[in-house]
Amino acid sequence: MTDTPWQGDACSLVEAFRAGERSPVEELAATYAAIDASALNAFCYTPRDQALETARLADVSLPFGGVPIGVKELDDVEGWPATDACVVFEDRVATQTSFNAQRLRDRGGAVLAGLTTASEFGGVNVTRTVLHGVTRNPWDTAKTPGGSSGGTASAVSGGLITLGTGGDGGGSIRIPAGFTGLFGLKATYGRIPRGPRSVIGNFTVTVGCLSRSVRDTARWFDVANGYDPRDQFSLPRTDGWERDLGTHIESLRGLRVAVVPDWGGAVVAPRMWELLDAAADRLIASTAMVRVDGVDTSLPSMGAAWSISGGIGSYGQLAAFWPDCKDVLTPEIRGSVRVTKERYDLDARVKIEQRRMELNERMAAIFAEVDLVITASNPDVAFAAEGPLPAEFGGIAAGAGNNGRLTFPANMHGNPAVSVPAGTLDGLPIGMQIVGRHYAEQQLLDASLVIERNEPWPLVAPVGATNK
Image 1 (cartoon, rainbow, N blue to C red):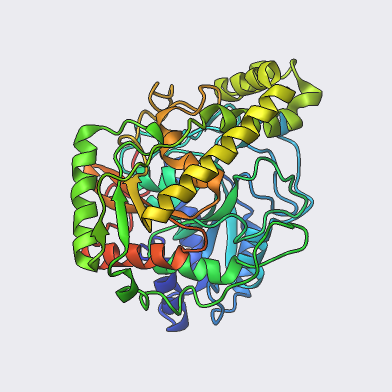
Image 2 (cartoon, one colour):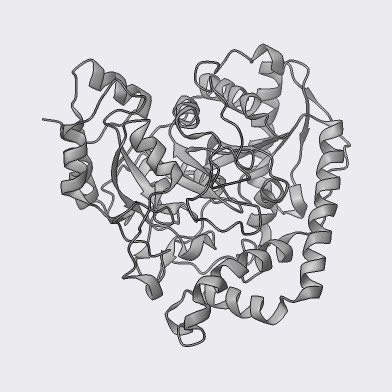
């Protein structure tokens, strides 16, 4: 009998299933035992009988056959809670399953083990809600795993599951990946369709996963990417993400790279940037890329445009309950709704569209001079799990702050970006963010693969899943 969940990556777990070394039922039992013993508060719902039946019938010949995965609380699974991490909707039940989760289950053969915690409406960089309490970072349980995909990050890094869904509308895959030592890809806008029945919103949100390895993420996108007519902005299917992994490393030679400590006007902790700058130089040297200094990488301020346009989505759900519901919301979402109501009008809409256009022009100009931008995933290591948000981190209500400045550009422009583990500082992970042109995911994956091979990162946090 398996005592603990698999501590390798998901691809190696599938190999163990196929070799008869472990079984999906045993793995699921170990997963639930670890969840029950954990103080991370990474899961908020576990449909155990349903998952057990799926595990019993698992087809391990499928890409993720029998692998227990976590589903981010903001992703729907039919018949499961659909709360958006908000007390107002604590009794709501999903009537559909998101494309991301459905494809992993039906095409990939994964076992949906439960919902992982998220920040309320996905609107802030810390996973702490009125509904579910505080989710903790397995590297140091006094710290946050980030948000909004914080529960998935905590569970994967904490050794509970090998893989889980994530979404990134302003950094919500890359920020928690950076804080917890995981690999996180925000793909080109539309790679995996959103929905069904998703509102368009402010054109920033992409979905994907948080993983322990580059190949796990490549396999995930093999399974989940591709057009669906219910999301008219979704992209045609592309194959070979895992098959072609590593075959383009030679093509990285000669790529022009800007290494930017103040991307988006952010201020990165000097001691962390020293480590990231050195890591960037090692990557550039090992791939024969070319570091290009002196490039104008300045960007227009986007925080208010992102936060107000994103706040419309939260208000759209809460309008019927506002203002009576305000005392049961997190401070950040309460502030977001208030600010959005006060500031959003026709003039604000014009400014938002103007700012997006200005950003698109600047991003195009930057990527005409360089092929990749390397920066930080976060301004510093993880902060306190309970909050409050440090002033430099900000959030929706605070106009995004420092953290968002590093991640928002790729969301607003729609191009791909990854967070790759790049060592530790004071015992906590730091993440290197690599940003590429639209549709250049393979370059980002292969650059990340070079880092993974040359400087392997811990797949699971040293303190494990039972730190109390």
